[in-house]
Image (cartoon, rainbow, N blue to C red; front, top):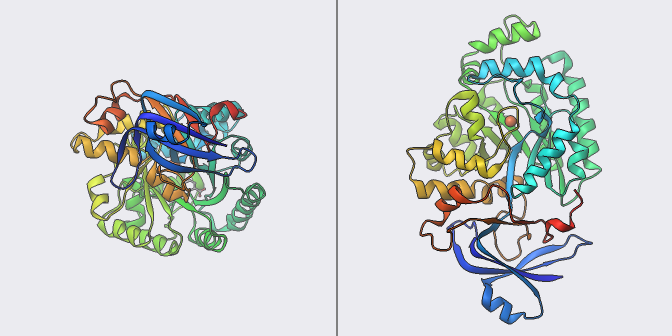
Length: 421
Ligand code: BEZ
Ligand code: FE2
């Protein structure tokens, strides 16, 4: 089946941030095989004249762009409202350890609610960090395109075989459902929380299986102190919560990066990464994702985007989970970030924010979407945005005025009315 979709304004989300006014897309999709793609990009009028027999829809006062990708989200923490403490990383992590079991009870409704919110806010693709496996089934049965990062965590050398076995079980479960829409992947929680031997096994597995790999990295100043100087708050943390006195990190930051060679990992946060680390990440062909509101709540700072640019790294913006956010709406996330980065050039920042929820997360997740280009998947979002037609600063006005819920979302060329929710 072929159809034409158009809007007052199309953000192609190519490298130059091209914008097509009164643009149209010819897309094809086969609902049975899920085969779909964007065939042609032109102005709407001439497309409809060339293909008068096709169904055509045009959205006025609206922006059509690639469906969004939320590359770092924890659905399993969707029960949190006020259990966890904010303001500094030590208080937060301590509260996670204290409350994580309570937060995992009666989870299914909250996970469903957040899946629906992703779709309603224009997200077609997610990079879901799965710590326990509770999100696997709901995500398999959702319309979302999912990269499911099965995560391992654990610093106790005696528990490593058990932890790796548990990870393999979850990974195997996911592999049975592997498809173009559901991709099993792996996550190392972080170098402070995951023993070197376990991290090495996971990195090998990711390489061997050719799957994506994600890790939290240099999120807090306490983590930096621990990895670089083997002291500070984490020493007390391991003694208090795990009874390990005189604990030492099992690797430093550079040893961690050495493990990840040939995996093009997705590094999440990197708030305290210095030039040496960013240079190494760029040489690893890694990606950097941040979650601005989470960063504000836990660490009181934002990722330095100028520094990232210097190393030719492109920021990815994500929501993280409700463990460190008040809402997982990705449009609201970039709107908050826009006001957080008070000193950056407004137009450049608006473009970076939009590319950071479309083009670059798609590259990081290895998905053929995230850009409107011929041959790309027909994953498209249409947002009403009053005044966009006459705007002379369209990306900036989109960040400010786009409705936080989509008018229409196409996944594999199929609109909402065809999904089973
Ligand atoms: C652990 O399970 O060893 C761990 C969990 C969270 C933070 C640090 C260590
Ligand atoms: Fe996270």
